[in-house]
Amino acid sequence: MKTFAIIPAGGKGVRGGSAAPKQYLKFGGKELIAHTLDVFQKNKLVDEIIISSESTYFTLLWSIKEKYKITKVKQIVGGGRERQDSVYNALKSLNAEDEDLVIVHDAARPLLPSDILTEAIKTAKVKGNALVCIKVSDTLVKADEVVDYYVNREGIYHVQTPQIFKFVDLMNAMNSAYEDNFYGTDESMLVKRMNQDIYIVEGSLINFKVTTKSDIELIKYILRK
Image 1 (cartoon, helix red, strand yellow):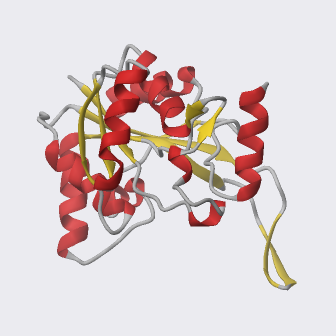
Image 2 (cartoon, helix red, strand yellow):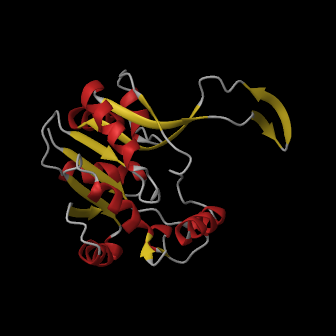
């Protein structure tokens, strides 16, 4: 059984307010995506990394691979209009067996703890999939300028990445979604549409996605330290 990691890196980074997509900005002297790739490079359970990106950044990505010795990067493929399209393009490029595992992880989550990645891979090997999440700890409200009502947070989670599935399950879920013209917000939603149980692995607040200007300031602060 092989384990592939797909890193979709086609986001425009609009909410971050920068000219270039945030995954290509430097933090601590190193591109954000390079920090992310390094986590998978160092994890002994990951065999191969595939990046999906706009072709404009192919040259930069290959140079990042060489500069930081990310030897597990084997392919860089074209991204798509939506995240789902980018993941699908990468998935189709794999030389994978049905039972091989496919990890999908956001390029802009550079602080994924290695032990969480390892636990997620081990869970997926036993149960068939793994979804990294964190329990909601704050009070939740439904509101539109003023509070409408309070939401029961019991059993509610924030979904993160990595998300890990058997190759056959993720491919079938993707194909079904396209047949139905359905776009999900993440891969777990597509697999759940196939009536499969999705198994949760506890994540971490440090595994946040760099999206907004505030996130960019936070990641600058953390990596300076």
